Amino acid sequence: MFRQLTEELVTLLAYEATRDVHTQPVEIETPVTRTVGTAFTKPTPLVVPILRAGLGMLEGMTKLVPTAEVGFLGMARNEETLEAITYAERLPADLTGRQVFVLDPMLATGGTLREAVKFLFRRGAADVTCICLLAAPEGLTVLEEELGDSNVTIVVASIDEKLDEKAYIVPGLGDAGDRLYGVAG
Image 1 (cartoon, one colour):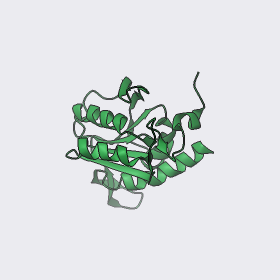
Image 2 (cartoon, helix red, strand yellow; image 1 turned 45 degrees about the vertical axis):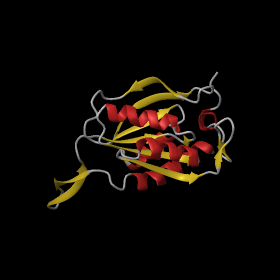
Image 3 (cartoon, helix red, strand yellow; image 1 turned 90 degrees about the vertical axis):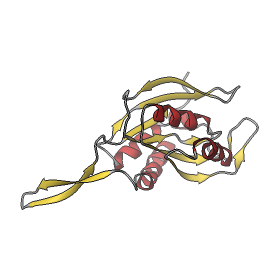
Image 4 (cartoon, one colour; image 1 turned 135 degrees about the vertical axis):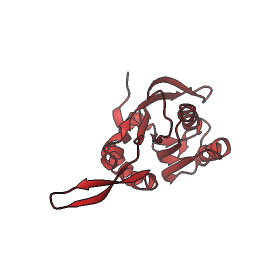
């Protein structure tokens, strides 16, 4: 049930997140006449789920932008230092001019999204939109303070109350990855 509801919610969030997606007019031939339609500009948008929990959001996003390319960024939070660690990436080497949509269900401390966005900008991304199910005010503040001058948009379904002493979102939803897929042993 959590997977299904996540997919539905992400599709709704994707409508807002893609409001300013870059498009261009294209001439097309219909069976009746020539007309002008709309297509993504080149390079096309790139959707990047943060592994593992962001994978649960991918289907909902690609329902709305099925021709977008998909890359992957494996990041985890060190539970002692709360710092983000990158353990895998599968992205184009050059993201110059790309609009990138990052999928990460929980924005808690902001550390993972901050590092993901910095990584994408170092690769040349033009702008980054982060889509999250829940956010804590503390994480939003970190992103605003550290990325406020960048071309970053955050789209969230809900802003929860706070972070607890372990940096978990309160009231939150628990670990999104575990809820989507169970505990990987």
